[in-house]
Image (cartoon, rainbow, N blue to C red; front, side):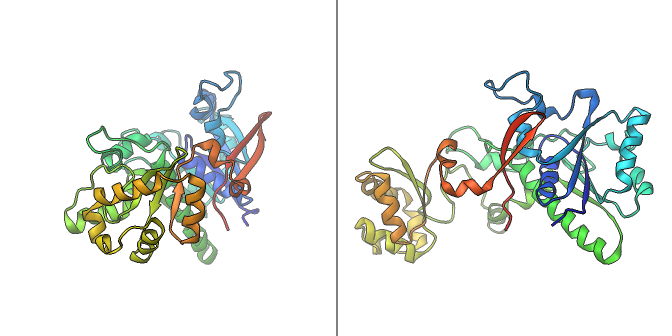
Length: 346
């Protein structure tokens, strides 16, 4: 799709590289410029205790860097800077995520590069926007934008998501902005300076939780996996063989089907409002039923009854599923066999 597109990636860690990987997956030529003075992207060293210290890359690095040409450059060195500029001259897109003031200092800001390529799409990621120079690591953003406060169990400390959620959300927002800029360039021939902050991406992704506050003054509280507006939704139940089963009942009809399957009286919890108000009593009844049979039985019965469900799985169990096989991308990077999950593309 993008085999004639050239992307120069002046980005490290996760959000920027994920955006670059998206275009690489679609056939674009992606030149990843890494800092020679720090031996490359910092995530090269973010290794699990089990990973070889001798390897030049980590599994973390591999997760965000697929099908890229990596070039180590020192932007303070004149000859290295000229190598970058030569790449810029025929590039379509630049992706960068420098700390505030660093791009200008290194002469790689939009105003520095535009004279070399007037139609350049310059996609810039910031942490908190132009007015806040703080380093923007994901856990800080999760704390500052409400995600951690409402995540976790009641009466326990706030919990962050176990993936760098805000980086991933920001990467998606950046990709959307770049795609819009590409469409604009096709019709006008003009480039564009795009700015996306991790902070605003996080706010934009609060969805119903933000609106619950903005319209109703409701501050979302930690509820574990439960949903503030729907029940049973996210509620978990232990099966006879020790598996955790999660239900996502989003309509009265689905709940009626559940009652028929479990032998419960529908009228007692017939509306969603009743189910939310009597969540504890409802969950007690459902738990008693689910505990009587093994997970395989419930999987079959719930599917036949068209009731949304899931089994809580670890990574090994997730990637045993045949549905995951076509989502994997394999590549040899610097002599190392690597694999990661691709972008979900049609």
